[in-house]
Length: 328
Ligand code: ATR
Image (cartoon, rainbow, N blue to C red):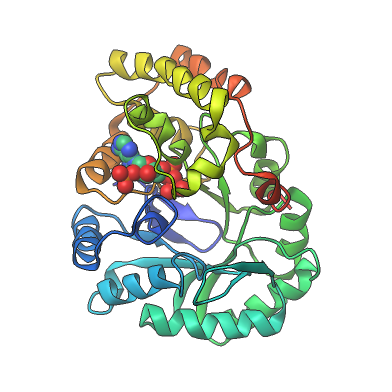
């Protein structure tokens, strides 16, 4: 396991963690609980420490409850990151906005601690920036949780550069979590420079382009209820064009005797020491393969080949509503 230090916390973590969202929602039906817990335990056995969840993953926050069940008897082996902000009806899952207020922060953390069956969250993120609450107020509320010992470090997700700088004046921001991959490099202009300036780790989510960069969607299509089917990159001619682009990643993979998914992860980690990543998987085989990307070295020529793909990707990474609340 290659470790990197989380922001300015001094905490070393293996730079590949596990995104747990897909175990409960969004990418097809949830994984059955016994199998999901087995996978989470196997991940620890393979050296994974950083597990990422959120209040909004799974209707009724079932993803946090899953992690609580899995980790209650091995809390010291794991680093748990969770997030608050987006509001959902716990019964229907319907979204009703983003709330970064102190009240919501204090309400949310108690629920997360309870479901996670722990008395401290290692990394607590604002999941999306609330346009109605100044970031200073949200971060001050999160900083109170650090003082009270409920949270160890603070993060922001999909925050823009100015927001990161303003937030860091209130309290150190250990991590910014944003989508970052061979296909999604929009954060390089503004977000990454702000992370570097403030000593913040970038936690790259969807490093596999929600699975697309593995090449699996050449033979497989996303299911009807699958959230990806609502995103522009997985629709119509964009879908076909994007899947075809993966051929160029596969060519690099073949030259390195590895897989396209491994190339995608090696590319993300190769962008700098300030980066960690949390690929999501529900399968042991894919988890093992993803950890294999620690060993993949890309040559300068290969980097250059991969670097020119993002500009050729068709379609936004979210639908219109989703695009309105990123890099905010
Ligand atoms: P997110 O951060 O949103 O979870 P991601 O990490 O880019 O997105 O991609 C997650 C998707 O990639 C999942 O659909 C996962 O499917 P499985 O649960 O079937 O594994 C898929 N995925 C992860 N690792 C993979 C691998 N090594 N090969 C193929 N697909 C993989």
